[in-house]
Image 1: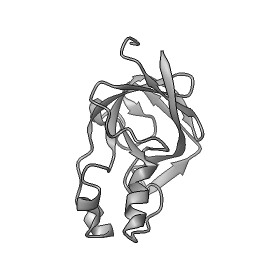
Image 2 (image 1 turned 90 degrees about the vertical axis):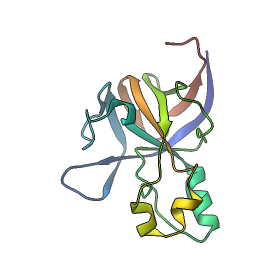
Image 3 (image 1 turned 30 degrees about the vertical axis):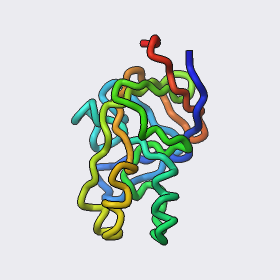
Image 4 (image 1 turned 90 degrees about the horizontal axis):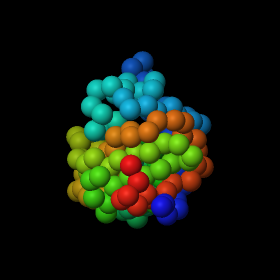
Length: 151
């Protein structure tokens, strides 16, 4: 069983050639991560960084205006998954299944954007997931929280 919880707002990858993140209309994933991303096949438990729109709202409320993608996310969604425990599964679209692996720790680059960001987003930066079932994710795809009995 699954429960519809939100949708994909934006998709980003990091490329070896560019320092900035590249926004995409769709991304392809397999069990090694996001195809074309510079972190593909480096750490499968950190294959996908999911960030909630809530993180950008928190920054905005402190007069920190940053564009989507600034927090390093691959998937920006309109659902807040930060409360989900490791092992929780999300289905995106018809085929992709991700398993939450760990919370994202705050890294130094956030303080270069604004010194308040690391403390402000300490528990609200994002979560890492590994790919259980690959496929393609597109902007606007529906996000489902899967119940525990689904592999």
